[in-house]
Image 1 (tube, rainbow, N blue to C red):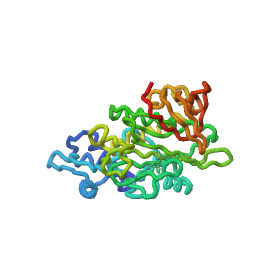
Image 2 (cartoon, rainbow, N blue to C red):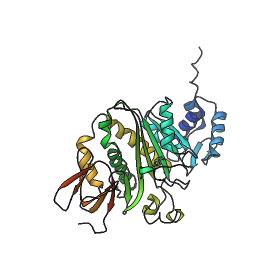
Image 3 (cartoon, protein in one colour):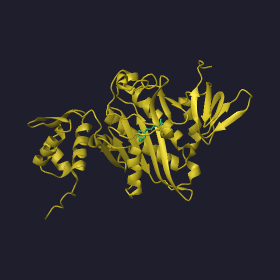
Length: 341
Ligand code: BTN
């Protein structure tokens, strides 16, 4: 009787499956026969895939009668390694990793507009036109930092999205706190801070069609492994990387895999409306503004007061000197130079 041939696989799928099997044993040997069976290829084909992966920065030790062991991993973003870390989660997603792209937000938006299935993730080691809020430049060198965008097709009314970036912010900060034991802070509405310096920024953009969101792109720039003294003048007083804060480099691929899992979970919770109860309390855990003297800038308008958290709609609450509580749905916040109360 003929055996059914294994389904045809892409080189990426084979390499991800090999890496996942080697990661699972945490540095122990896996037999060539087991790996060959796993991917439905010959042992020679497995060896050829490994040779190819060596060129990407992977190291394998091959010992007769014992098999293969993973000895080295690339330190820069690698799609197969991220997918291998994520394999146990069995999530459905599409990941692209670029060496250079104009903006991961723009690339994700183009893919969604061209009908690419969602959720899709575009990550890049470098951006030539990285963008922040208010059209500002997001400095995006190839220096171990992370530039990543998630494309979704939520089909919900526009009004429901008001708290989306805030919810993503608390989800990313919870992950950072678990992953690094560090204390991240959130500065309304989209900054992630460590020690009062900016470590990350979020930029959510949407294509709206008769009040329904069609395409949604959530972008995150996170200073992971850059050395502050390599940043342009003026930036390193205001910015910090995780590696600098932790005094240790971070495995950017393992972190990116955890981030993808967390963002996809957070997206589904948000769409199902499961975020509303936990939102204000979880924001408060990371809120760096609460109780501080701040000023909110909205175009020409500047309002000073004491930050008092956020409301259910994600608006920033500000207690003014006149005793009023003002709500802000948009604007830029600056901290006044007074110590916390
Ligand atoms: C901000 O703080 O103003 C938001 C910065 C957002 C930067 C990220 S990097 C990945 C994604 N691609 C972009 O062009 N921007 C976002």
